[in-house]
Image (cartoon, rainbow, N blue to C red; front, top):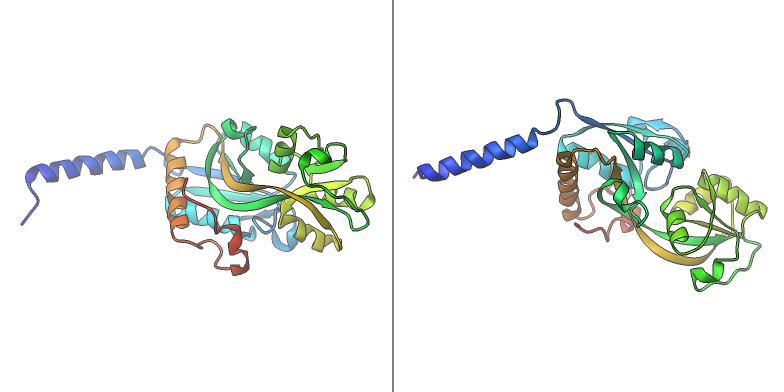
Length: 262
């Protein structure tokens, strides 16, 4: 038996509305995506600080590629540094997006957000030859702490009344720590482990793990809501499927196991 005429009419209206909503994006619309060397979430070949397209790898990168594919939205992708420059560019330039970004009280209203992509732990690290015992961040206020400029770690420390010495890269912070110019390096776990291995730094000691952070795709505030909704819907599907996004690197699945649909 066919559908009643009224049901067919209602279905046609719903499909028309859906089609109009889906067509809100301009033809050939795409987003200019950028990221930096933040292993294992996003990284270039041999941890280089510049890469394009398929050269850019990482567990968050895999998820971002998948959600753009499912959402049917075009993009270009470049990995470059310093983080502060591409962070500022995403704030100011329409059509830009940036990942992997910690969503903080300071930047909450500055972007449109899609996430969470993954999760990391914020830590304070000491060099092998330093013995520092901490149980709270407050105890670190008189110490010289290095962080990456415009990073979620740096923003959180500032929100807690600390004044980190910001550098343009995590590599620079590690060099300062090893040379004694810093007492502590505030960074992300497991990101620091990759930088330490690359620079041959042994014996770094995690002094305090102080905050778990979700990582997001941050989009310029002029990004059409239709694009944001499509991307978030695609990510919700991926999250619902479980460990999609870490099939290439099963040892890193713990970085996305706790992400939930917002």
